[in-house]
Image (cartoon, rainbow, N blue to C red; front, side):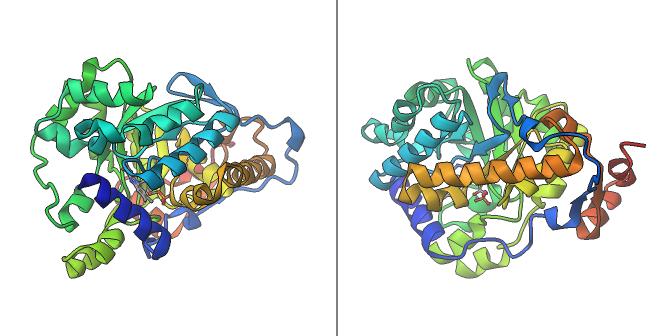
Length: 355
Ligand SMILES: Cc1cc2nc3c(=O)[nH]c(=O)nc-3n(C[C@H](O)[C@H](O)[C@H](O)COP(=O)(O)O)c2cc1C
């Protein structure tokens, strides 16, 4: 039943246009060009750390799937790329396999294909409001020998799907139950973004990182529009949320946590912009899903293209490494600036870092 729902999501994401019409906000963001960068492009280093692990680039394969045969191939192809490039990879929600051991292989295939990669398990916050606790979290971690567990926050998706689970009262308490888990917890939105207020609540609940999962890419309201009997409700909320650019600034400015910027990120220039706005890494979902359907080489090629774009952006702002990129001057304009200034952020600080 859950497996069938996840298969529907995958098929709809591959066959229909389920992108939000509101953009991710990075179109409002410009990195200030350097005509005299004083560095060689070949010397640029993309390495960084991700929850204590050294990785080759600040990129993450965002969690998408598991629970059915088609997912096995996709997870395998994504994992082969994660292993080859030494970047972290998330799995889709493991709930189906917590309830039915016979499909656990559609997730554990990732560990088989990527023995050394940083793998991120995945369960939903709604489950931790109810019956789930440490035991289920440990089972999800064990299933893929995970290095971290993402707890997805998806109130929008639950609200617009048939029989969605909309009992979120006690969800922070649910997260706190996981404090003694032996791997770090990543709180992960799935397309509607995380505000500064929620970022602080999540930090206080003990999470180790936040994936802002912002508006501007795949929309689960759009997915449900094609799937559910609540088509009109889902359509009304197609573009609901906080854009990825805004959520990145809000979360980075108000917590000390590593911030993963996911949601509509489509190239390495957007990765560079997100890092200059405070992200520590960026997640990619649907573009890699299309590639993973074909094969691991296609996923690797796409990620290498993104890395080269990131390197090029770094060259053009004179940043030799990721720490220097964090200090690049950034101009924030348009709706993103309007939102941030209404929320008390002084965008001039980002524009004048070098002076
Ligand atoms: C087919 C599909 C299934 C997904 N399933 C999950 C999931 O099970 N758990 C989760 O945390 N996020 C899930 N996501 C959300 C992604 O991790 C990501 O946050 C979102 O797609 C935005 O990134 P994008 O614009 O690059 O696609 C899924 C995304 C897609 C496309």
